Amino acid sequence: MQGYTFERYVVDFKKPYGSPSHPAHAHRRANFNINLAYVQNLNKDTTRSWRAGVNMFTDMSTEEFKAYNRFKKSSDSVRGVPTVVHGAPAPTEVMPLTVDWRTAVSPRVLTAVKHQGACGSCWAHSAAESMEAQYALLTGMLPVLSVGQINSCTPSDYGCAGCDGGDYGGAWAYLANTSVVRPEVLKSVTENWPYPIPVADWFYDDQPKGYTTSKCKDITADWKTPATSWFAELTAVGVSGYGSVDSNSATGGPAAQKALRDVGPQSISVAAGNWQWYESGIFMNTNSSGGANEWSIDHAVQMVGYGYDRVLDMNYWIVRNSWSTVR
Image (cartoon, rainbow, N blue to C red; front, side, top):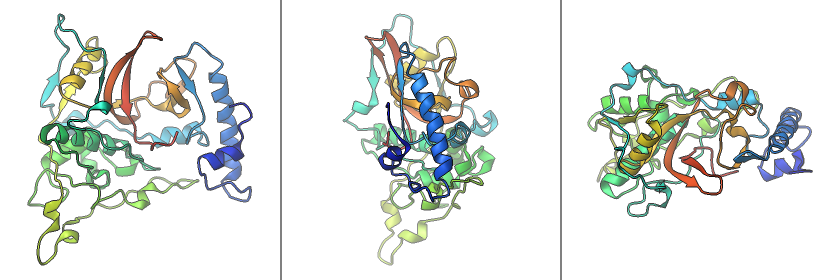
């Protein structure tokens, strides 16, 4: 990383402000230089279990990155009561050393990693991903569900505000209570291809005045012809309830491991403030790398497994993010 320049960064990550005449050039260069120095300083600590590096967020200020993560936990009255609460394994039960749903092939339960763009829709991605996985486990078929539909159509009554953030629990509660597609098919969300994430919701304004969210739309009429209703060909996945795992407790770790093994991938909320610096390894928050962002729960992802690193003698969780496959 020594000698790495802003000019190289602009090319590597296909940034639009390579020219000094671009209005954002000076601002982004300043952010990059500050962040690069911070990353280099983090890597001086060789005791860390993870390595910091340059990534798609290195030209963002910490304030901008904090605003990018917009998970907002809804109230229990909005979420409703969990259908089932998953407990810890019995003291005599031996849990497998590793569970990794990325390797499942029969059935395959994980769709490709998505990109939320500038939209704070992590909650909608997490909600859709867990529905996809459960549908695949129940039917053997893996749909790619519409994140855009969940993001645009889940109302504020359920603690969700589109690109301004929300809660996967609120999305499930809404789907369990109403239809976001058509009145005669309740509690369902369609596939991604007829209702993709609108381009407007990806928009990144270098001087943002807030996030925009496309309006919810009824796509039924788009898929009807005189001969047949193509809408009937779409996979409609519904929600009748959800389970939970007791978090941040003495048994929370084993309970989550058991749920991963027995139930499948899980939607979780995390403190992602320091993920801006991550490159590789087993990430851990430490008192020297976070400040105000250290333990603030601000992001939703899907937990898809756990494991154990013999070299580091550390357990770890495996999570699936929605920040594209660019590193």
